[in-house]
Length: 177
Image (cartoon, rainbow, N blue to C red):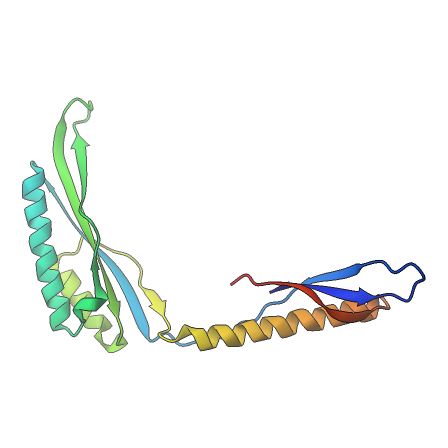
């Protein structure tokens, strides 16, 4: 939170004076969800062969994580990506790499090990680091915002006192999440 505080001055010619401060607030929350992004890829002589392999594994992976307790609404398939891989002299396509990502929101962290096991069993090509989440972040954010405001206000009061001024009101408040 960045705040611009107006201060009064006891001078014949009143000038607008400001104190600009930044405040911060931190609230710690315990993650209760995880978002995993897994990639399945295949390298084949034809796009069709590679796509069939990726589609088959993606269907198996989807079915496996659903069986582990993940709802269909918590699964997100990314579009198919196709990359030609050329011979060393760049004259001709040697293979095609086809890949697709599946993002899984694990709402119950007890299911996390089972989802990882399913992914490794199926041969997921790449597993990005899990993004740990708090399912209800808004109350924590509001607490942190309040702490940031209080921090900025305390700094402005201290600077006004040190400079022999008095705070009248906040003229501008900017939030940076």
